[in-house]
Figure 1: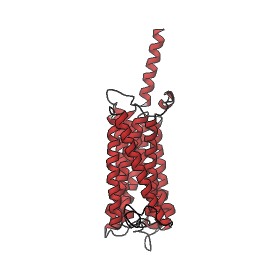
Figure 2: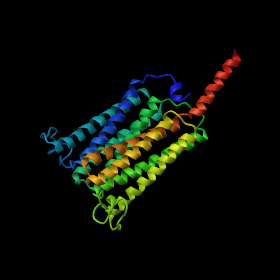
Figure 3: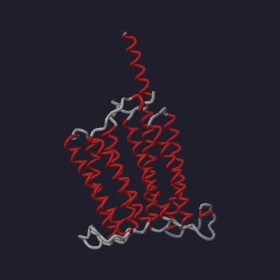
Amino acid sequence: MPQDRAAPARRLSGFARLAVGTAVASLLLVAVGGAVRATDSGLACPTWPGCFSAGDFVPALQLNVWLEHSHRLLAGAVGLLIAGQLGWALARHRSQPAIVVPAAVALAAVVVQAGLGALVVLHLLRAELVTAHLGMAMVVVACLLAVAVNATVPAQRRGGLATADRRLARTSAAVAGLTFLQILVGGHVTGTGAGLAFVGEGFPFLGLAAFGPVTGEAEAFNVAHRVLAVALVAAVVVLVRRARATGATGWLLRLPRVAALLVGVQIVLGVGNLWSGLSFLSVIPHLAVASWIWAVLVAHTLLAYRLPLVAEASAAADAMRADAVVAR
């Protein structure tokens, strides 16, 4: 019987609900940040922390202005949630480093993230700072997912992981690492305006069929982004096959499949970016889906290190039932 069906339903604690909600809020924040970038609203509020002056927290009702300002307000709300989460963890879960440590790192990372956000505005959307800001957002998401997973899924293995578990967990971690690199490169492509480097006359099929000479940073990052996309497709396929080969079921098998589906959607959105000339209608979901792929792979890695394979759990359950029959 699959592990997630065999286990009795367990009501989430208040802290677990807060952890899950905070992780979801962080992904929403990333999506809103993507909307800010896709609509060129990053400098709609030219000062920080206020909009048009240091104390201007209620700016004029203009779409670009309020899109950027809403991003800041949501970031502040997420920061408060993270601070509250850490306080609760220290008060009630002090003996659980798997909860306290990522909660503390998340708070430190979100403070750094706020500082990077200020620098992005003050330095007029400098590409390196925009990329660092995006990368730190992914670190925050990963830390919050660690808190959520560790608070909601009790570890079901003592004495270390089996070989098959380690192989699956390490594969998942490697694919997540590749995704993180791809997100950074993609962020830099956007920051340097390199998304359409090979779209135009002389480059058939939106530049997908032929590349021109790599003469500068824009072309180099554009090529790197496409090569990494191919590598990520192959890596996710390997992860799905490994999950099946190790006998995993439940979320240990479902999440790699979800990641594969999202990667397929991401490729379609990427082509849509080229076809539309980087319309916000495709750019916003492209950035959001990238964070979802990262979140799915991080969650799968955490679960793969935390849960036993279903096949082993089923064998243990069968052994217990056999012992019960003999005892009768």
